[in-house]
Image 1 (spheres, rainbow, N blue to C red):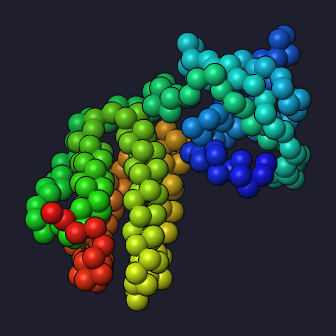
Image 2 (image 1 turned 90 degrees about the vertical axis):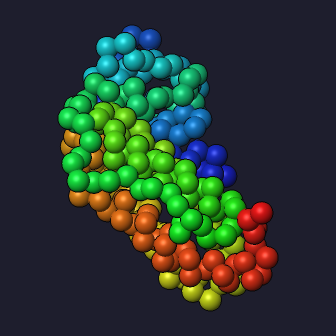
Length: 246
């Protein structure tokens, strides 16, 4: 898979059992990532590029998707050779639907964990960043109030994708205006991205809802990051005329 192809296939990693059918031939595999254009399987059995496959999600009786194999290469995992198979799907896999069969319902909101209330203290004075922060906080609040573990999984995935775009904007501004504390700020972004990916995978692997510890971490990180770390660059960016609020 080329570098250009990887750019076209931003992905969400998973670990979900599937069964693929090439006509009468049965291929047991694991769905290892989902992208906007398709997904990838890992299997001991290989298939040829161009092959048409019908893929069944093992835990969902009525969930199947058809796709075309676009690339195949061998990888070594735990001392064994496997085939990594890239599929261009005829329809996009809905992660929320996939997770419904496996994840339990949580009994309402977690007591004592309050939603974040947006106020003027959160304004960094850069309109695009402020608007993105509002969406970010909205997703955190939905996680806090959501009673459905399956919904939580989808929200975590959405949040992981959203923060990638949001952090990219902040980091672009830091590079453009040569922000002096750029490296430390980017490091905080990287740490948070890594954490959210861990949370996504934990929900999928353990087949349980988002824990109170996880939600508290997300809530506290967002509040502290906006009110302290982001405020530190607010005056600097505005001084350089970066996207001032009207």
